[in-house]
Length: 174
Image 1 (cartoon, helix red, strand yellow):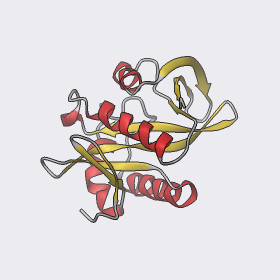
Image 2 (spheres, rainbow, N blue to C red):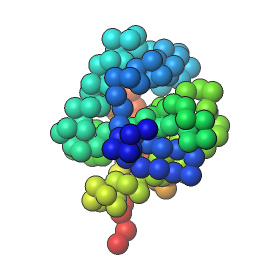
Image 3 (spheres, rainbow, N blue to C red):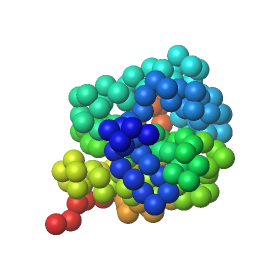
Image 4 (spheres, rainbow, N blue to C red):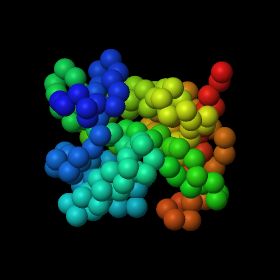
């Protein structure tokens, strides 16, 4: 891996910027109906291309975005996790989001990556508050948010997603 691509590292994962070369691996998530159960729908290749371009635009505009999660011991793509701006009730806040290939579920990788993204947001990006927006029925993602130190604040209706989400949040403490 090009050292310039690496954003951060955990015990088991390297997180780096997404590139168009990741589209094939991302298809393993975005074409899986179970992995995308709490999203509006699965995505085809064009949809995943658009996704990566959207994330890359965030790198340019915000200096952060979603990052590829690479298993260090296997040098394999496992998923994505990172920070994206999200508008909630008229206010834009940084959200930790994650999606992992189903074969890597249940290993604690999403929690590990989310904690690292939380710390990166506070320590390197100077964020004061970070949220996560899982659907209330997405028990696994609610647990990841809690494992990353975020606490449930409230549920809100997201018009653009046409669904209710939980607002989990954590504040940076001095």
